[in-house]
Amino acid sequence: MEHILSLYPFAGISILGDFNVHHQLWLFSPFTDFSDELTFDFAILHDLDSRATGATPYSYS
Image (cartoon, rainbow, N blue to C red; front, top):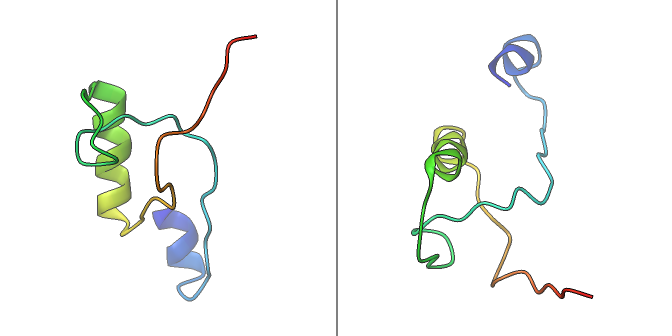
């Protein structure tokens, strides 16, 4: 991302996806593991935020 911004400093970049991140500071998850911590740190470093307002519903069919 830093490389793209160095080439196009005024570019609008959207990062979208279901990253399945569990972090104690996001949506009050009861646990955080290493990959969740890396994703959280990346988001903080790049001033990103989550648009999720609650836990993602799921079903096992």
